[in-house]
Length: 122
Image 1 (cartoon, helix red, strand yellow):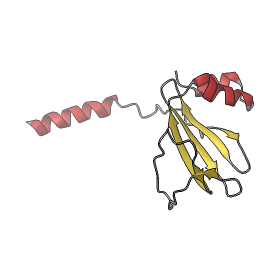
Image 2 (cartoon, rainbow, N blue to C red):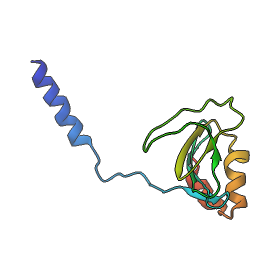
Image 3 (cartoon, rainbow, N blue to C red):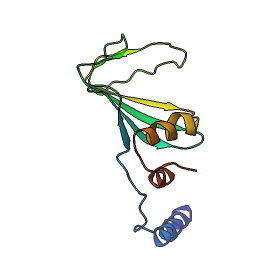
């Protein structure tokens, strides 16, 4: 009886699935912050923002831990300074002030307001 109910529920779920609906994907909005460092806004909303900072080899970000390929190290928000010698990508998740942390830098970099309205989650 349980297997029959499971199959029935699964069949209904498959019938209701809309496989044509796809989210709008973006590679993010990037700002050059040094040579060769880049700040990429991946997503931003009132409760969470995610950025990827791409560090090259000429101008390292500050951090003292040695990491291998695809390894991670969570950084406490209370640290004042971190150095990362590139090449490396660093993901930063935080609670943003959208105007100060996201809109301001992107507008200053030349991104038009209509694009920012589409990019920023409400």
